[in-house]
Length: 302
Image (cartoon, rainbow, N blue to C red; front, side, top):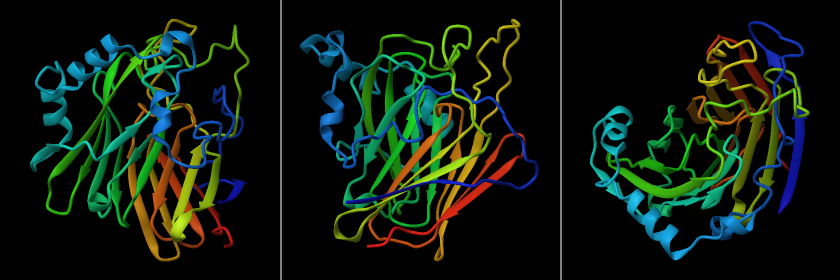
């Protein structure tokens, strides 16, 4: 695999905002360190308490059952419009069983061959106050989707793929959170931590040539992604402020149009695996205050 990485100059279409404080405890691509997808990510505990037990795995199985879920019916009605729903074990939601840092949880969803020519992809976190993290309107086949999200508490994480006939296929993963509050507590406290700052809307692009001509694109956008549930040091609620659209395109047109929400982490990362390689990747984004950002980079050489 050949990795190509660049920090790309950002064009702010409506307004350039310099020095906006955006907090992060991680570098541009510290998440998704593994160059290849692996089911081992689901069983990579970071501490002794993380180790799944027979009891916890049985509990996870029960909590994933939509007939036993307190929120599934409402989630279905709010986020899935029309179409039959099938719970599909072939959709693999790859993330840790137990997480300690609820503000930035990396995940990858592997999509089976028969669903890669999809209409839509939706990532839902069932027990979050902001349940929808992203909704992808696909213009090309997609093999895998990755992102970093917030978890308010223990929750089923559900990846939903709408096929060409309008049927929703649902893959699920139960995730347990050691320290809740990914949506309602600050991701970085400047009084006790060193909080990284950056240029609002700066876009990083990383590309990989993969096996059999496949192509991986990752982008990271510097943005606070404020949820509207965090109380600031002045006792006031920090208003909701987040990237609400990210578009991927190349010289052949649109790859994917993505609706995004504040359930994504600060400085959100989106990853797409495509079966065929393109050229001259372009990323454009917009936030809910109307600021627009864009960047471009040539595809990696073979």
